[in-house]
Length: 108
Image (cartoon, rainbow, N blue to C red; front, side, top):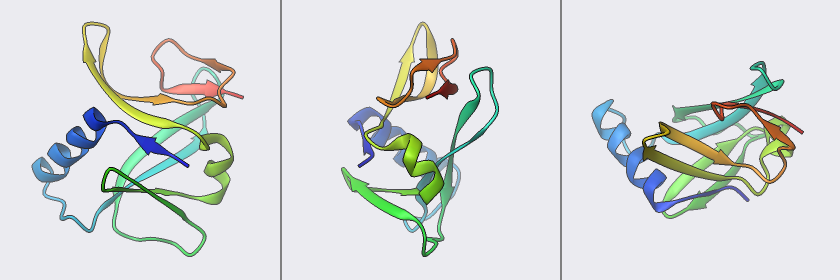
């Protein structure tokens, strides 16, 4: 399962509205190669659900994950921080053995 915090949920709703996406656009979370730790998170809006996607729903937000990325993301929580040390979405991933300083890349 992939979950989302209340703060991230609120920010997703705000972004969806500001960027003009309708409610049928969900959050797609994926992992791709790159970054200083080897793997990078990718987060975007998507209104298409592929047959191979896993769909999770938490706090009314649908989260789409392709099967390859799911191996790296199981148990992850999507959070949003807006403190002095940075602002943006943050992935709390129990599968990551190492993360970079910016939190955008990781390794397993």
